[in-house]
Image 1 (tube, rainbow, N blue to C red):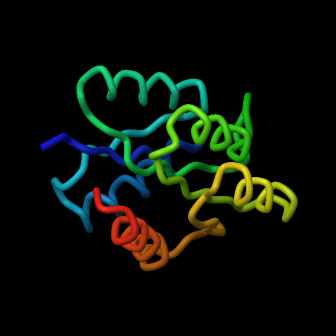
Image 2: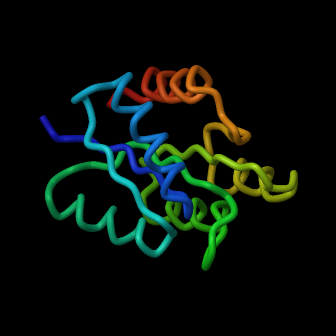
Length: 133
């Protein structure tokens, strides 16, 4: 069985730590959990995991990050890795960016910061039910 990963992308380390802990607490050893502080680092993590035979199945990305905004990042992810499900997390995205991410990146959900653990886990479980991983 192929190992699977969830990748969290946010420019704030404390957010990444919190999100990774919530996911690990709920899903345990079912997934490999990786983090990246920006889009460039995230692409590097995806490539490294692929080389190790680990499939990224879900990316949870912040919207406002230096270098490349989350909607732009997730659009490229969709083009290069169409099987990866994406969720955008934001405290600042405008409706235009959210709409663009929904239409072009095909994100499964957009969560407003501060998110609730219940909402995050519920969305991830819903994605996993829709897409057997």
